Length: 157
Image (cartoon, rainbow, N blue to C red; front, side):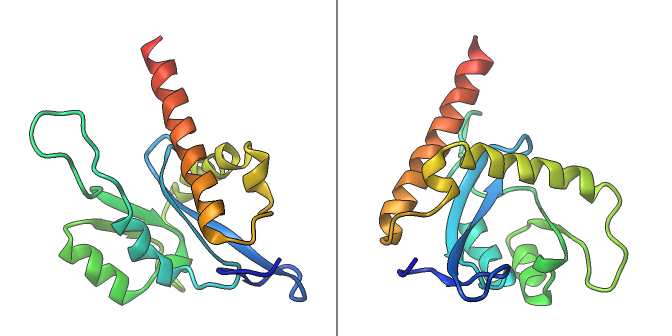
């Protein structure tokens, strides 16, 4: 696959590929998803994901624009990212490199995998066939909307 946001696959270096990087709500609902090259560093994607979270409405007053905390594994550990999240009054819950993992982070990883499963139930997203990134991102946005709509419909029935 040639195109924007492709890079060497971590599994098979001769093939190019891309990855979905989601930021999700507590139950696995994807709030924002970006498509990056397969070899892109996770640290560089943290702040664009946090910036992409849409306003969350529901209560009276101003809608929330930021989460209370951001959870991640050691791939997202960086002093610069921690500093920037603290500036935004977001608590980073990220395992430090070389330190033992945060207790219970494995159970939270299950929710992240569930988010990938929700997105990849749409077969067009499981394998990226589109060469143009804007087309693929449009399908990703549509899938996110459908997941949210299904969850809202289920909650109200």
